Length: 125
Image (tube, rainbow, N blue to C red; front, side, top):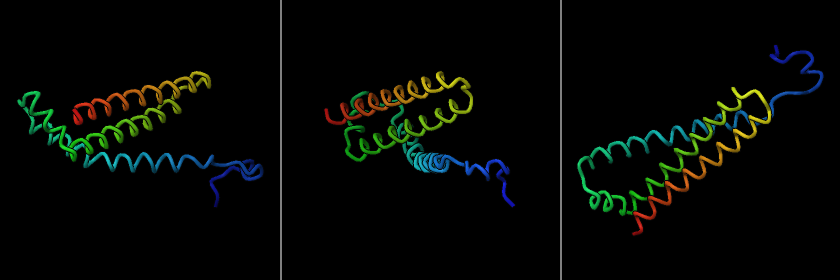
């Protein structure tokens, strides 16, 4: 028993073959965010009440800087994927959808680059 309509079977039209990839990338990025987020929350909680010099010293550790860059890159990528799904599902007009997708990707890229640059600037002096 097929879930495709007779017209769909006759035309041979079906999936664009990109939905599964998007689904899995979103799941993998969310799975990567679980340990990274836990590490980030517990690390920042330990820094409660620390001064700027202590936080700068913490960020300048190579392992911390790498983990922060991974966390930020994964966070913004996962956010971009989620916003893309919302735009594709709820923006009806094709032109507005395209403009929203381009703007969303641009904003996410700028925010990710600025965040990663800030971490690297503090970590590298």
